[in-house]
Length: 109
Image (cartoon, rainbow, N blue to C red; front, side, top):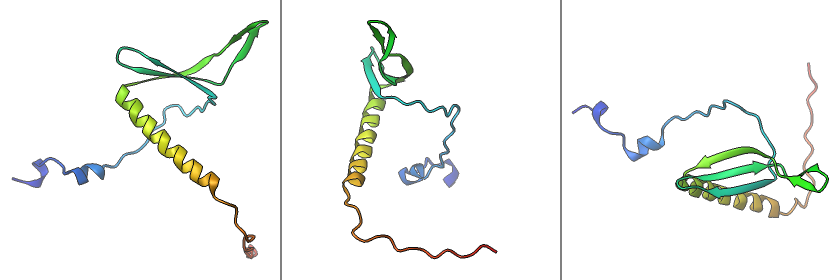
């Protein structure tokens, strides 16, 4: 039997070449996220905050809605937790005690 017909090993599967493709790279700032649960999906609604619509009436306009499976939400929560832990480690590091060593610049020719 040739190796071409055998299923890939777990190690070979991990070495898959994956490229990211961004169809729409519009970034929107979200200061609030609302979570809703449907029969089979979890909905994440993002908004930049509360706005005054008219006197005495405030609204929270939703600019993005993401629908995910429950298992996708679990993976997202794990990823966010790891990211927050790394961010907190970076924030807690004390500043250096000595100033940085200046680098001599070379004149351009």
